[in-house]
Amino acid sequence: MKSWYVVTLLLLSGSFSATSQNRDSSNSFLQKATIAKQERRIQLAMNLFEQAVKWDTTNIDALKAMGEYGIESRNYRQAVDAYTRWNRLDPNNESTFQQLATLYFNLGRHQDALSFTEKWEKLHKDKPMHYIAGMSNYYLENYPQAINRLLYAAETDTSNAVLYYTIGRSYLEMERYKQAIPYYQKAANADQKNARYVFEMAMVYYAIPDDKNAIAMFELAAQRGWVQNADYFESVAYCYMNIGNFAKSTEYLQKSLDKRPSSISIRYALAESQYKGGQYQDAIDNWDQILQVDNKNARSLYMIGMCYQKMGQKDKGMALCDKAIEMDPSLNSLKQKKMDMGM
Image (cartoon, rainbow, N blue to C red; front, side):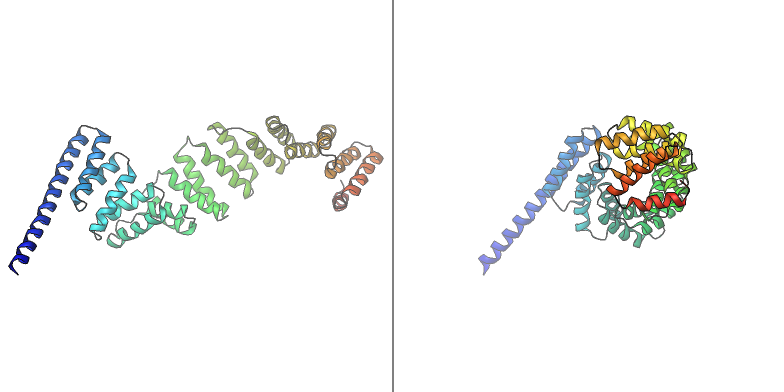
């Protein structure tokens, strides 16, 4: 009985001694890490912090220091690891809630960010994390919740362009275009170098539709550096076409076609704009080029027939329209529609 008691004491003594040694080693590495941090030796400091935690996984001082330095050095994954371990050791420590909410958000783990935001706000109702909660909900496509939280955030953060843009984008995703516009405008005002905010605002105006304001925003986007590619010119052209300015729509569609000379859809739109603007021969030339690529394009043939009729060659034009209808009987409804409209 006595020998068993002695053995037990020896084992307990050895265990305590090992634990004490581990904590001493951990604190030693922690001290070295702190010195390396002060000397701005980033990688060495992080390695030493890891060693400190490795020697004693329950050393909260080491975990806290590693987490703080991870944030300072933007090594968010290492910071998350440190604060997560600290949180497991002390699940009620509110400092870990706030830090983990922010870190998970920065890492794009938005559901986890919301989880720790909720824990923080249960203890600090007077210090809600509206911005992180709102942005996380946006990325999770919970748009009504995103708008609600971001509107609260905007009450105190009045110059945050990203915040306003995200509210506008949330309304856009919900197809509530008119409600999106004021927030796109605030985002564009807050960050006057950002062309994307203005371009998307132009697209929202186009969707409403409000073509005049869309044109103004397209032009402003270009002034701010938005690339004027084929899609840009085509979008502006449709706005001009919608307000009946066919000279301008033709100009912009030609610019779009210059960038994509093989595009059938752009060439067809250009021909249509020319037709509506009374440039019948130019329209014929473009529809004819479409037929050279696709000789079964009955709609192009039909519109060539309409051009000839507009140019006074009624018999030739009607014959081409009839031939197009033979190729595609559905065009007969188009013929009836144009007759009803006096075209």
